[in-house]
Structures are given as C-alpha cells and as structure tokens.
Length: 184
Image (tube, rainbow, N blue to C red; front, side):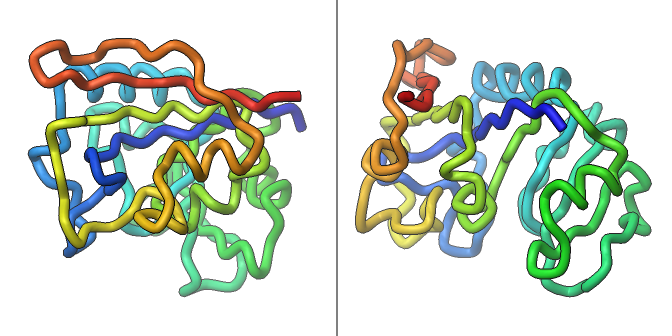
C-alpha cells in the first residue's frame, strides 16, 4: 500500500465545522471552497469520513469511500451506496478496510468529522485547513478533538505540522485555505 493522506475541512473563526446540531450551516459554504474541495475529491482514490460527514456533490456516488461506524463489526458494503465500505476501526485496520474497498494506492482524502480527523492526525502528508474568518458558530462542533479549548492551528502544530502559504478561495468573504504539512 502506498497512500498520500490528506485532510480537508472548512472552519469558522472559532474553529467549528458545524453548528450545535452537528449540521454544516449554509453560512460556512462558499463557492470557492466548494470548488477547491470538489476538485480535490475528484482526484482522490478513497474518501474517509464518519456517518454525519458527506460532501453531497454530483460525483459523490462515483467515489470510493470508507464510512466509519460503530454499528457494524465486519467490513461490509454500504447497502445504500455501492462504492462505500462501512468500517468499524475497532474490528478492522485501515489497511484491511482499504483492501476490502479494493484501493491499494493514491490519495486518501479524510473529510471528517473530528474523531475521524483525529484518527489520522499523525499520518497526514497535508492537511488543507480552509478558514471563514467572518463566520462564528457559538456552541458548534469543533473541527478537531480538543477544539475550542485549543485552536485548529494549535492542534495541527502539536502533531508536527507547519502551515504553508495560504491561498485565497473567496475574496468577498476572505476565505482562505492553508496547506499544513508534516515537518520531518
């Protein structure tokens, strides 16, 4: 197996990826970020996320994915999405899940939520952190385990990652994406 592990999230100014009901609100959706995200996922060999995370894009049904769930024991094909494998990490390794999904190489895109991001925190080659500095989601769901006690930047830095130069995705709303890369 030869994988490049990349994470993707957009966060509010207070580090949230969802509102208090665990839903990504429209106020956190921006065309530039959606385009960046969609193009990245179109290039990925495999997408990994939890039961509440899903990109809901036109190409979504075509993408191979692992959906983390505690509701099953054995790896199984999702009955609602034939390209999706239901995976309980307590009963199968990431390598076993990839083999079951018939993916042996390429980019693996981790798209959340917080527990899923945390599982790969020491394996990311790049974590793409999009930020919407004018959006606040008080009481929302932090993007990573440990947010809001720490900022997303502090969490990534604590795992040996450093930020690169940010790219502007939406000038009208100052939305940027910053690649955080592992420091050897």
